[in-house]
Image (cartoon, rainbow, N blue to C red; front, side, top):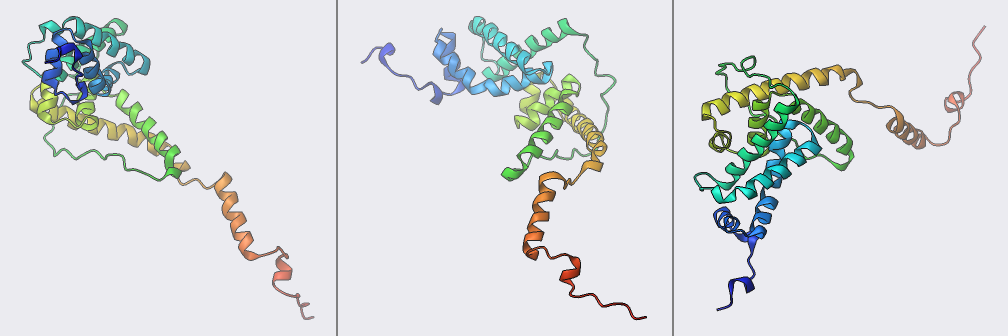
Length: 242
């Protein structure tokens, strides 16, 4: 039998438990595979707290360093992703506390029991709409950034990562009912913020100036044929009778 060191391991094909065992044994390639698998999810968690791209990357890097140094204490009582999520959240919140005070949730939490209406997801558009889609994404990201932290975390997990209520509750250490309430409140606040932003620019809706205006004008004139003037197009004018 070939020695273990000579056997190529398909890290990408391993499940989370196998990767965790290899990482605990000091296999850094296994931890590399873990990072590649969960980078986007954990980045979104960090970004939802610090609300800055560069700082979120720093948080993620520091979180990974902390996780790797403590991997031997991972007891597999929860999933590896849940464990990493909590480390990243703690690191992000620690940075936030050093930067500014934390706003409490008591001013936002309610006991609404209305039905939770699904939040509209982006619909793929044609290439011609790329600029509009980029602007819509910017508006959405700004509105998400302005949510209270606890609402942002729930919204990111439920809407962007498409986690179930139970998965979200496990990762954040919340009750499922709390997850539902915070998601409802996050959607409501987002709709309000987006409505205010969109209504303020309503007067600029359906623009038809500039290139688009020139293009259709030239197209219409081309279909009419060579310009002859209004009088010529109507034939000779008759003199008015005396």
